[in-house]
Length: 119
Length: 242
Image (cartoon, rainbow over the protein chains, first blue to last red):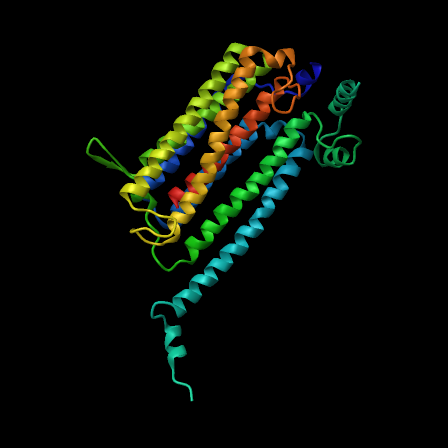
């Protein structure tokens, strides 16, 4: 019994209401990005900023990670952060695949080289 | 007994050092590395990290096919638009689904709070509210899928709007997320019943693992539910808004 008392996360209810409201505002803002049809780098920057802010508030406050000991936060966030390596490697790969397809598919310049008669 | 050892260990950990030194001290300590958390909570976090890996693999493969295709990607803003009262509103259903899931996270967080306060009525009510929000989310997803398959002719292997990979990515990612929501709704209802009947106070053994849980199980359930919301944040930004 005393175990639960010592180890539970207890916070004032106003904190949850604030974050709830903030998540609503951030979601509305990211929806507005689409509604107002922002394009290009502006769109990307805004979408990613709102996404990471929302994710951060959910993890830090709703999931109480901010209030846990650093040892646990590290065990959770470092492996998750390592996923950035996978994501960046795959984006290089995707770029390369796209370039190759543009050169060799659908009448791209690569086809002409391949079709040249060889003796 | 074992329980006393845990309490004793907890008491000692409260006096533990903070910061990076604390990380070293925790990880090199006896018995348990994760101080001040019940073991079930540490296990749920580890499960969630592994689940993060699965969702990241799905989203990364979606990124790869979307970036590498030379065929234009169907515009999600138009594909998921809804006509309401003769007005064409882009992404309307998805926006509503987003707000519903965020609200369910809010009620869940408050259920955890009232749980620790031993307010059974409020906790059970908020858990049921969370489950209802979750169920309506799944309902809207079913509607969205029906519209996409029947009206728009989207299939996992192709669609009339553009790149063939659209369907495969969409069905795979949203189905996996929807399954998580559905499982969450089922467990929320089970948890609400436990709270309502006072099983957590009586420390009655659970039907599945026969373990006796206190109110920390509500918080552990909450971790799972917030994670489902968290994944939706990423899907919303990366699939619907890209």
